[in-house]
Image 1 (cartoon, helix red, strand yellow):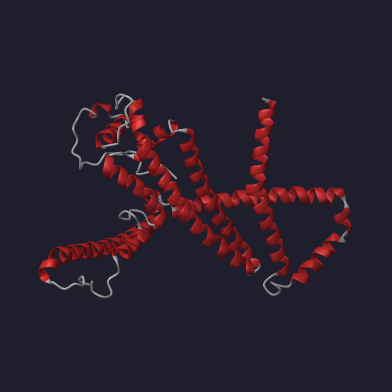
Image 2 (cartoon, one colour):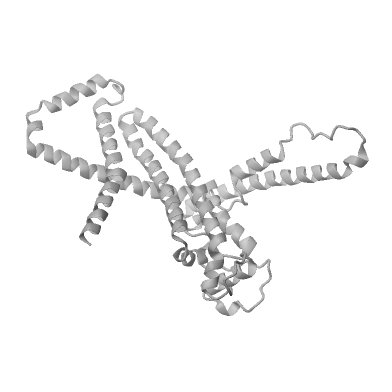
Length: 343
């Protein structure tokens, strides 16, 4: 047991140093350099070198007590900066991966609804254009042999993008009709939309139970995807912190812009991966959860369908008496916990 605790402590210390202390120490060093140089001497490295030499030649710099105080203060300051960056990253995540924005304060909730309406309007228009183009091409294929005997196929009107380009434009807004103010939020919420539409399965109800019976490899994959999402938003939190450096030293604003942009791009990729792993786990293992609850008999593999999804959702919501009822297939399954598990 002693060896196990020592190994756990070692891993925690390594994680603490890599995640909090090292980025925090870099931040404190940049902040100190910005305070020394200021806006007027932002790129004068020689000025910074002279300042460091002056500190090193100070009589107090050679004492053990001074060095110990500086070291402890630096470690504590670096750790504090790391904690603040993580807190800012959590706030960024709540904004970027905003699935349940109706719980926001009134002004932000109004802005979020306006954003959702604007995105949904663009999505509806692009979807309508694509549907019109698909119907036009279908009519061309149906009437082409009768309308003309020319050897060359009928050409599309100029200026109309291909169906693949139109689909990419739609996907850049959202894969499903937008219900969130951001693409990242819709990417996660779209998992629930598809599972409810195809299987009457409510992920917010089923996921906490399903996660407990996932295979170890699948659980590790999901944990890594979720951790990557947290790391990318923390990177953005560091970018927000560097804005404070930019107040004293303008290159700090450049660093802040680079960190925020990089964090945004990486968070989009991490959100996409998280949603993929979540949806794949639900589709692949929901039947096993239903078998554990006695909703599926035998050991033969069985495909997830509407009956299993509906009965599993009713059972885990505490509405087992509704399993014997025949609900219309178009009737949505009620949910008391929201559309998706919290990212």
